[in-house]
Length: 77
Image (cartoon, rainbow, N blue to C red; front, side, top):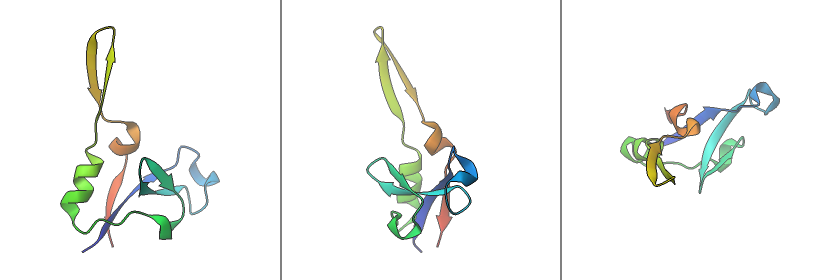
């Protein structure tokens, strides 16, 4: 079954389609359903959702999961 990733926009219902945004790939989100990135299996969608970022500040590294991934949902089509 195919899957895609959604999240609620920080702008809420000001974004068409009740504030729902779809991951389109390349760190880009869209509110257009037809432009969403489709994953062939759930494992690939989960791997994308588990994305973390590592930053080095003052010689110390910090790894975190951005809010857009933390608050996203994988949807089976």
